[in-house]
Amino acid sequence: MLRKIRLTLAIIFYVCITLMFLDFTGVTHTYFSWMAKLQFLPAVLALNAGIIVLLLALTLIFGRIYCSVICPMGVFQDIIAWFGKKARPKKERKMPYTFSKAKSALRYSVLGVFIVALIAGVGSFVALLAPYSSYGRIASNLFQPIYRWGNNILASIAEKYESYAIYDVDVWVKSMPTLIIAVVTLVIIFILAWRNGRTYCNTICPVGTVLGFVSRFSFFHITFDAEKCKNCSMCSRNCKASCIDYKTHTVDYSRCVTCGNCIEKCKFGALSYKFGTPSMATAFPKPVSYSPAASGTPSNLAGESKEVKDPGLRTFLTTIAVGAAAAAKAQIIPEATDKKVDGGLADIEDKVAPNRATKIVPPGAVSLKNMASHCTGCQLCVSACPNGVLRPSTDLMTLMQPEASYERGYCRPECVRCSEVCPAGAIKLIDVAEKSSIQVGHAVWTAELCIPLKDGQECGNCARHCPTGAIQMVPHDPSDPKSPKIPVVNEELCIGCGACENLCPSRPISAIHVEGHEVHRTI
Picture (cartoon, rainbow, N blue to C red):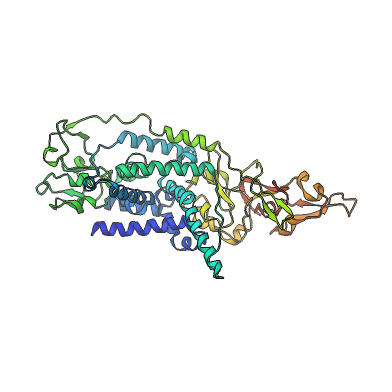
């Protein structure tokens, strides 16, 4: 029953959280955004004391059920491990795993570096290790395109029957470095989970290390009955966390995620999940090694064990750090190679992002500093943005954190979806009235690119579509009312929404673009 309850809750959380990254209609976010706010690291960054206390209390009472139920990365590893078990030869399916010593030196070293990076505001490093953010990148960059392509296929079929309930959506690469990091993360997680189950959770994941420390003293935990145990090794051989030593009848509670697999596999009733504070001996088990004479059969695996030293690992994140640094150097610029024909008369180039002196972050982010110190780079806001405005940053210090650019759309004053879905407090919740008065940047006009001066044709597109009336068209020559009219920006009224930049007909770079503000202000 324990395992069935866990599986049911885990499936519900995993499906709903995944749908939030896939859904482009906003319906899923309305009902399930609270699940994102239950994630441990976003709750810490958002200073959500209630959620933090709740998760710590759950761990202290029931063990690491957060890792096996609430965390999507944990459940994702279980799914991969299940398929990995099915793919093994029949003789190995019943006993795919084995007990291994805790890599304590590695775990706490990673946690220490993670905390330092968090305090120092190195968001790119934090985003690389955070489990929820890592899964978010995989879902947003790899699963979402597949989901959208499927939607577009259904939309084309429905269109043939004159039904428009399903509509086409764009599928595009928002950031090549982030895509590469998502692919590398998926490959690493897949290999580790396919072969060894919960290796990532119990060696690299900083959240797992913190909750693992608390779970050593959990009130409910897996307990051995030594009199009933026949040393068959089935519990150890089916533990994805590799934390059960059947020879000494001990469980490393810092790694146990209370999945219930061991209880289900035990045919002698020697394992149970019950109340009782674990002793110091079981809360901090000594590392053991099997006798060299031991073979793989249960009958001769009961040899005496001896204490050995855990050498740890001197290098643990070199590959990830180097890969992130290399990927961050690549700048994602939409290519203008694919032409769109307007009525067969002219080739229309795709827009290219201007070189902004200061990047733009969404309304509600308050400032660049607030975004950098709170965002985990989970990509939920990027996935949820209906206007194609948000995309992951390629700057090394803020790698994968969202920034705005207006080649595909502009930040509509009536849309506040990014603030509704952000679980970490990087984008604070705002309403429509607030958004219309938040200045994230201001428009800047470039004379040599403007069509009235460059081509001698009337335009005024920027002024017509400015939602705040911050742009007025005035004669280029004040002494000649018939001279070409050019835009003049009132920076006190401009909110930096990007409507002018997006709708400017100048190609490939708009004649008017938005420069961001380091600190947002209300106008």
